[in-house]
Image 1 (cartoon, rainbow, N blue to C red):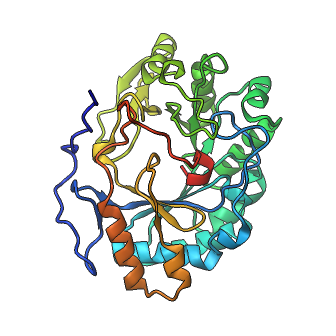
Image 2 (image 1 turned 60 degrees about the horizontal axis):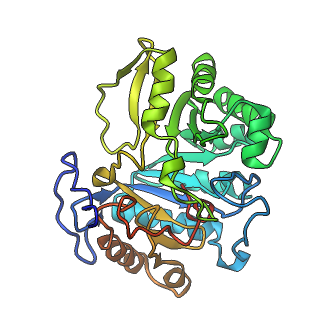
Image 3 (image 1 turned 30 degrees about the vertical axis):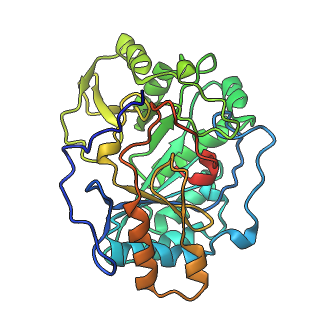
Length: 351
């Protein structure tokens, strides 16, 4: 017997299904996508074990990757025609994209201006943070799974912890605050690092969020039984600190948040697997090669790059995007026995 798909979230207001030529990105379950995640590259300078093998992957050929102008045009269509209000640039590692500051500047110049964020491993951020701040970047998220140098090297297959910490400090100095830290705990490796990470973030004024490990690894080795769950994480944190649920409206945000030791700092947990929030999802994703994905776990994509390069108008591309959104499933289906991981790993999808 299969597990039913999650019901639509009561936080989501019903919305009319958009017809071609009108409206935003509305799916058949009434959810409206206003948050666009844009992967700028599938390349990365780390080899995190939950994402890709130590030897790396076969990267996309350059000709298949969207140009800077193509990225900006698609984002502009999303903002001007489809109601996108938040844009987050991801990878791979987006700092490897040579034109990143220019892309950020072009997107922050759009009207209405979207909120623009970046998710990065922070290697090279100490050099680039001032330019990104000057380009108008609003927010930054840094992936950091441990403060132990040996464990960092074990997880990422690179000895770059010092560079990551320096990048975070540079982002704070450049005014890209609050610096948010995303951490994934792995059974038998860094599963006991929750408290040290929280205390480091409390000391430095960073905002920490733990993310349950998801089935997005390139070698498809993920098993639910080996996952460090939200309950495991909270058990560690509450043994060392007083946590009180944050009563602020969560909206469509993926993280459940707790106020730490009376505040004002909070810590979040994104329980993508054990406490799915699909019913409130407001995201759409654009891969580095111009494919629209409605979900991290989708096994289908919709091609915008071909239309873009074949002379399609903005209105025609917007219609393709609307039609692609209609096929969004009610949930990711991880608990369904028939669940299959997407063929692309996280590095090729974008977070």
